[in-house]
Amino acid sequence: MTEVHTLDLNFQGMPHVIASYLIKHTQGALLIESGPGSTIDRLQTALKPHDLTVADITHVLLTHIHLDHAGAAGWLARHGDRGQGAVVYVHPNGAPHLLNPEKLLSSATRIYGPLMDQLWGEFLAVPQDRLIIAPAGRDIEIGGLRFCPIDTPGHADHHYAYLFEDLLFTGDVGGIRLPGPPHLRVPMPPPEFHLAKWRDSLGKMQAVGCKRLAPTHFGVYDNPEWHFEALKRGLDEVEAFMQATLPADPPVSEISDKFMQWTADRSKREGLTEDEFAPYEAANPSWMSATGMQRYWRKYRMSA
Image (cartoon, rainbow, N blue to C red; front, top):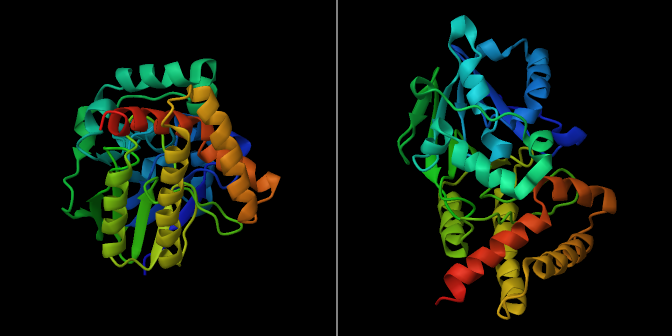
């Protein structure tokens, strides 16, 4: 079994919120997820115990292009040995935004405002000659290792999970699960959160028969049966919340307040303390999911 190292990017000074996964191979090393631009210094520090620098990173496989997963990809593609950075693999729907991130960054700036730089840092475009569009289902072979990208929309339409040996890297479509009491959340950001697609993706992930899984938020777990059942239950519960809350089309501020309370109550029932609640909010802000739910409901349920 090939060793997979979990690099803690210590997002906003908080441990166990965002991971990048490191795997050594015959030509150097690769990463699953680059993390955001704001954690580049931490990424470089995390490589040192493995006797590596960014010059040794030959490839980066992105599950999707959201800033917490792909923000440093352009930097890594430009900062390699002999002037050649890492080759970046991405879903076809995400590639245009890595080549020209202006639209992505404009949208994110409207959401985060003055906190944009503090949270996410610099997001550089990936040079075209360092970007590979990975077809779903076609194995990626790197230095004797093989990864299979699985098209898994629901969280985002540009989302892949990657099967590597018996381990499935689930990005965000596998939910948010941090160290501590068994607990899983469904991250539902705008604009592409979609329940039916997510349930289809859950079926795809279950079908591969993995023995371990690794969500980007956070860590490697060896009980996929529990995890997938918790994800199914989470999707059912957020649908029930929407059915109870959204038919009257309340303002997003009201949805956010109600969902934050709903989330806090759910977390307490599952054994989380207040200190354990905060990292989940850093990885998956309730207000962000409130916005995603409102957009989904208006587009797909109110118009049905």
